[in-house]
Length: 122
Image (cartoon, rainbow, N blue to C red; front, side, top):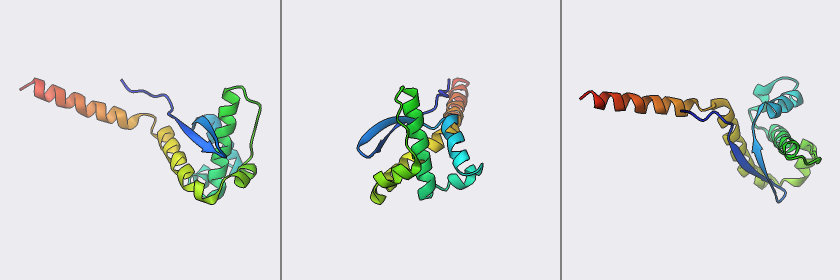
């Protein structure tokens, strides 16, 4: 059985760590920031990475009942360019997890099941 829950990751920005998940609310916020063109946002340029971070942080704050909201522009003042490498890596993992939705696990499970059936028959 595959686990289709979206994966959560820690995202640390300006010394604060958030438990974030790339859900449809995050996608919608980023898509809106890019006038509907999510493909441009997936390039994770500086602006796109900041928009994703803001959307993730705002969603995490909303989920935990915290009223604080941030903008990409505010985050741009808080994040050092050297930190963006690690942040982009986390963003890529979150996006990959959101887009795969457990498909890789299912394919792996199917292959294992076929192997078990093949060896059971011999």
